[in-house]
Image: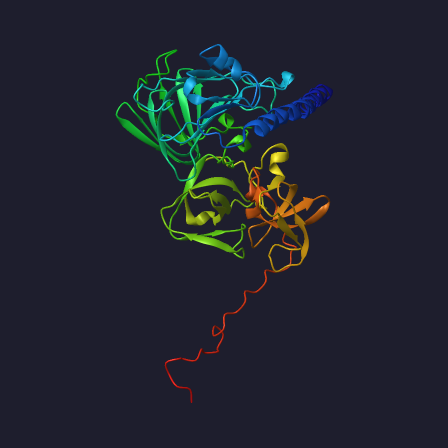
Length: 445
């Protein structure tokens, strides 16, 4: 009996070890291919192309067919959004190192970027008297990729910072001020709020979504244009819907929220680290709703994000908590998502006369050389106290003023170099440190 039990346990352990090994092998095999898809798409389409569609992946199916459809076949192709009526992107095919990745960026008065990833179809059903692409029907495939590092197919809408927009998606009036993911499952549309806030209105009822929440709307089978009921009451975000989504492809890359959100119960300090000894960024007043990005190992501190985009740490006991299982656990504050490939490290000098490369991040520090206009530099780090970046120019390392560079990199995602000399003390203004100016209207003694 003991030998039988031992054999069973040994076999079970070997099975588990074999499963873990197989999973690790699968990730090791397909992760580089998925990353290559995102990098190619990023290199082609991370730019402001208002009024256009940009194809970053496999050739999409486009209506009308013919010249318009053919024009969007190459990666990096741009086509005027107003001449397209429907788009269907393909599933992520790791074995072919391609898949559907496509951006659409309507003109005013509706300003947002729509990102299609994977097997997604979107059709413009906007009435003729309204701006094109203000009302759409979206459907995403439920089929999962064979690669464990590939995301589910999804359509994501993101508005420019602080600029809400009103659109209609699958017959639901949507007011977006941030980042919203849309997926279809069965006869339901899932709206998941990833940043900012979203209002959903259907069948005479409204639901407000906070980051880390989702709501579903139900339809008759095979008809996503007309809801048969109002949006469901918001629930906690299902993390499987957003797992592995390439947030660095968004115009404003964001850290994905954990399920739920928190609210300040009074004035609470937002700190740079999970400690009462850490510096205070700002004091957040009572009643503010915040995204939860993660927690520390003790679960006493939450890493949070304000609607302004500012992030930091808050003591959990000072917050009203409406959260689920927080899987992102860390003690050191992680960097925000960075662009894929060289876009995350490259900068181009745009100053007409070039820009001075200095030994530290301030004009008071010694000059090393002058970097000419149009030169490409490699971004290495950012300053702890000024809008300067540490760069490598022809194997010479120094600091440049950020204003003199053009870059698609996320500057906040660069590491901070704390080993720089302290910030120079400002020059004192005469009379500001005890010496009084003589009054010209009074005679001197």
